[in-house]
Length: 128
Image 1 (cartoon, rainbow, N blue to C red):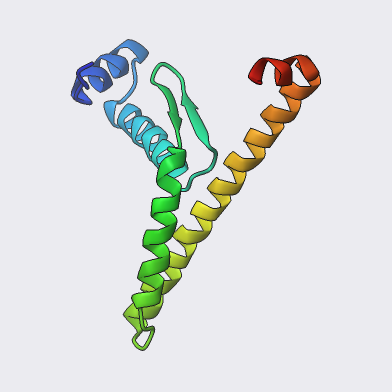
Image 2 (image 1 turned 135 degrees about the horizontal axis):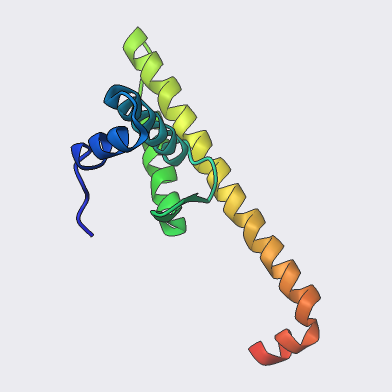
């Protein structure tokens, strides 16, 4: 799949809708900025985008991120204003990673509980 440049779909869309191309460009920019924010803020363990696909959190990467942010926090010495601001930012990212891990864990337990209710002992016998 080759990504298209915005001029390939903004101008034709503006002509088709008979409106200003700047308005169409602003709408597209808003949509993608909202999508980017949802992905960066780890709003959910997967983000579904129509006609583009589903973006999932890589569960195996979360422990690496947790260690990275924890190590960074241990190295920082918040003596200056810049260091304090950086520490606050990294603490926020660390909290997001922890929340994502919790979300994934809850989803796994929910799925496991559902399958146990659905199949009961038959599933346990199959796994053995």
